[in-house]
Image 1 (cartoon, rainbow, N blue to C red):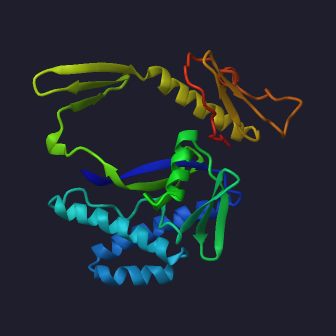
Image 2: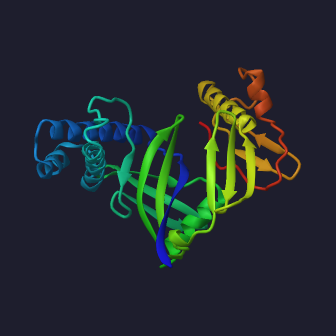
Image 3: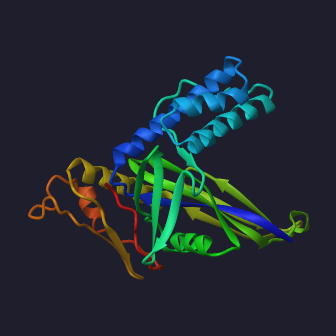
Length: 289
């Protein structure tokens, strides 16, 4: 059977106007909170959107998308017999939800994907997307093929970095009807491992347990190193060349070329020349800092 399938692709942003994008996140939080509060106060839902579109310092379409997220949260609350009322008092940044071509655009140029985000009216943020090679390749395919559609995206701050989460949809993917499925995959997520088991109706086909302790430690160390890069004024961790034998993180510290290691902890120094037993070849495109 043919069915449309949607996938969310995650990319890193390195915006020149970082402050502008951060301000937009906080404006999005204000819009979300206001929509929830007005609805709680008994204002007709049809009247909330036009009111906030005029008051918010965001592109009108982006404001509409954020209000729609607030209404979705309220609708889930009512559908669950008034369980888990969404709060209108949360603080901090909120994802900037946008429609393609209206709130944000993507263009292919010189084998790179360039983005343009309308963070504020008549005040865009632009740059080049960074991400895993296969993820970038899939987005290029979605931009060029009539069989794919690029949909809504969310710009957000995560772990001190800016990210863009883009939804792409394959319009006519051939999939098996779920009622005809012969195999079920069970997933058990634990503190230090993930277990998967493939089952038939009367037998276990195969199972595997993935130890996540090493990857969790690597992620923690990478985050710590990135924080030190930013704190010490270094430019960024630029690249990771991965071979079949080892992983080597290389740095490009332009502010202090004479003392590239000063001020770094021992664990961060080790991370900058980290070795692991990888068997794939790729390149780290995430910039820390």
